[in-house]
Length: 359
Image (cartoon, rainbow, N blue to C red; front, top):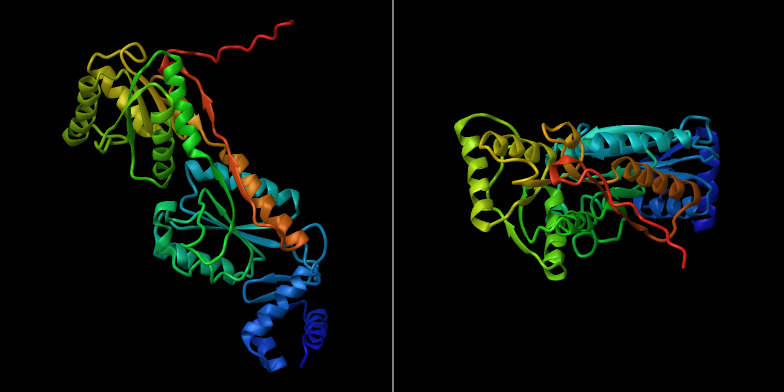
């Protein structure tokens, strides 16, 4: 059977049933699953149907299928709290504008659980998927063929996997965290700090922060010290206090009165311990935190680098929905710049204003 004949039979069956499954088409047409998926991809590209996991549905404008049901898309993230709560809200707001339904899966930063969540969300029959994987860019080779096996459009969030870790390029929307690190260090320099201590937690974001720190070391006239101490985010027990004291001792030995800390909670606890030891913030120790989720609530409100979390969720969702609406197009890699929210912990309460002068 030639491809045009198969396409006509597929569309005729879709008009009858409103939804098709690959397994059923294989039996009906007497061809392989690979052939069916290729046919569905071609019909999707032509705007004649919309591929979903395991099959296809009819299309109609404004986020609805041909049968009148709401278009459903999935989002799988490591956490539904703190950082990712704003990402989810942004995606949800964009989905509502398109009249689409958003289904959430949460992995808890567990790669095995993540695979289960992805399968569960795909099993609902979503037309596309947004994913922020439990694995970071530095661990992309562990993904293997997991991403490549997903048979609906995928948009990555806060991840930038590509060849050779995965077989094909993926659309992604991510924060330029390297720029965020540079932004923080540049602000310290503007305040006269030349020796800066840095403490990063073992997070996915740290991979990119280190890149920004390396770039800063070569472009700014500063000395940087990257501490190996594992700072606690909270706790009054002797072990936690000892870690905080060890880091403060490193700062004193290095001659640094400026500290970049990832994340907000670690920065807030460091400030508390510094004040318990009689240090003044920001006079004796200036602190910038990274993430800006709870930084403003610290005992001394923390200056913080703020990734555009809500906007990132919006952008990823819009990219996916437009791709579903208009069909395959060029792969897009979107990079969003974070901002710096200046508060008390650096000794500068506001940004210097820009003056417009006539010449």
